[in-house]
Structures are given as C-alpha cells and as structure tokens.
Length: 120
Image (cartoon, rainbow, N blue to C red; front, top):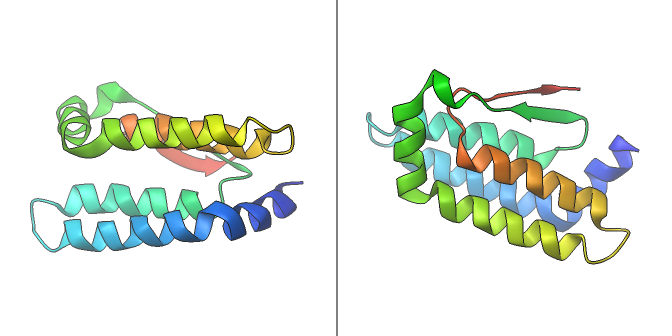
C-alpha cells in the first residue's frame, strides 16, 4: 500500500511540494544565518516527496528558540496550509490516507527543529 500511496502522492501533491521545499531550502542557504532553516526545508522536501512509510516525531524542547523563530517566519502559515489541504483530501473516502499525510506535514511544519523523520 505504501508504494502505491507514494506514487499517487508524488503525482498529485508530492512533486510540487517537494520541489517548492527544495528551492526554498536553497534560498535559505544563501545566507549563513539561514542554513539551519534551509536544512529543515530539505527535511520537508524529502518527506513531501515520499511520505508513506515515514513518520515524523517532534521535540519542541530540543531547540525552542529556533522553533519559535520558524513559527514567526512562516511555520504557522505552512501548518495551516497543510491542515486545509488535509481537510480537503479527507472530504472523499479515497483521499483520507493523503489527508493523514498532510496532517503529518502540518505537525512538522509547526516545529521542525528537533524533529526526526524516519521509517516506520
């Protein structure tokens, strides 16, 4: 199921979001101060391409200041975006697994610093 889910996700959502995260990470990495934020964007890009079979565990306490800065400069908007897209996916029964992946990305969009992404 995860292979089929990843292929469908890649076609309908993953390619665009993964590419956007990759280019955003490159923009952040242009400045020395933005390199940690760019690395988080690359984490998002990888997860956005193939989310099925991966899990994201957040740990706000590991880097609270970086997570607060992330929230101020776009993290909250990203989480709301993924939440809305997840709700739209969940309108149909077939889209519920894709909505769950959007909710996973929304959780990671709130607090990416200290979060680990790995196989289930």
